[in-house]
Each structure stands twice: as C-alpha cells, then as structure tokens.
Length: 231
Image (tube, rainbow, N blue to C red; front, side, top):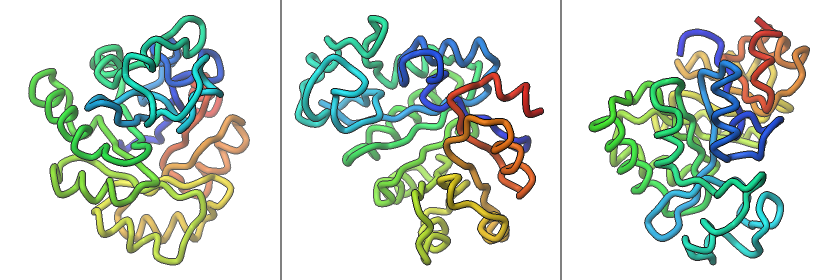
C-alpha cells in the first residue's frame, strides 16, 4: 500500500446495489484495486450488509441481528441479488484486488480472524491485501490478540482527543477518518506515528485532489472511475 489507494466503497455502489456481488464485480471491471464492504455476524457466518436494519437496502424488515441466516439469504438486496456471505466476496475478488472489511456490531472478531486465516492459509491471499476496520474498537483489539498479522484501522466519525492512543493500542496500520474532519494537522499527527490516513467517503474529484494535497494516503469512493480522473 505505497501508492494512493482508492477503495471502492461497498463495491461500485454508485452504480449497483451496495455490498452486493454485482457491485463488487462492477468495481473490479472499473479497475478498483481495493474493495470495501461491511459485515455482521449472524449464526456463525459473516453477512455483507451495512445497516443494522434491513429496510433501506433490502425488501426485508427488522434488525440484522434478530434475523435468521435463512431469512437474510431469502431477501432481495437489489436487482435480485442476495445479501452475500463474506466467503462469496473473497471468492468473487480472487486475486484481483485487496479487501477492506468493516466490522459492524459485536461478536465479529473471532469469525473474521478465522476467515482471514483460512483464505491466507488455503487460498493464497496475503495479510497485506486485507484491512480490517471498525468503529467498534474493542473488536479490533480482540482481532489483534488473536492474529497480530492482520492489518487494522479504527474508524472515527469525529476526532476524539485520544484517537492516537486508541490507534496505537492496536498497532493500527491506518486511521480511517470522516473527510469532513480531516486537515493537514491530523494527517501529520498520524503520519508521525507511522500510520496511514484513509478518508471516507469522497465522490468528487476536487475533494479527492484536496485530500491528496494535504497528504492523505487514500480515499473511499462510490465511483471507481474517479481513479482515472484524479490520477
């Protein structure tokens, strides 16, 4: 991850239903080298969806964590797509891109470590091609204890006074920040700790260019074609 990184946010979500396999395939077709998705733990599986409720992105109702896996898999997540399992995302990407997995909710650490170890050990993935991020910083702490080789990134929607301490406690690879709060001072503080800064979510080439100018290392975008427009 030495070059400026573009993460296809929930796949090519500007064109296809977010967090679906067709959104991921579309992102790969558009040249994305990194994909970002979100996962919840349900019945010892990791399902790929962002919201804690089903209504916005599927034809279902209720909370993810109150739903059975069979029910979740029966739903339409857009254009007839199912809510994917994390395993299906790994298989779809193959060796064509890296993967940023955002942990949503609780009880995800053990499962994500198990999946990553499996795909590194048996399917030729590398730890350097996987980044695990979360607002749930205690889940990241658990991941770090279970498998120190996994790259980690705490996410912040605002910047608390102790954000550097939080990141250092898990030996974070990067700090993922809401673009609305980023300035050059924060970028320099994070770089001084030998960590990268990734900004979310930017869908305008001028905004992305500004992030580059202040030293940000990568951005999340719904429109992977911005890779070429801002190079």
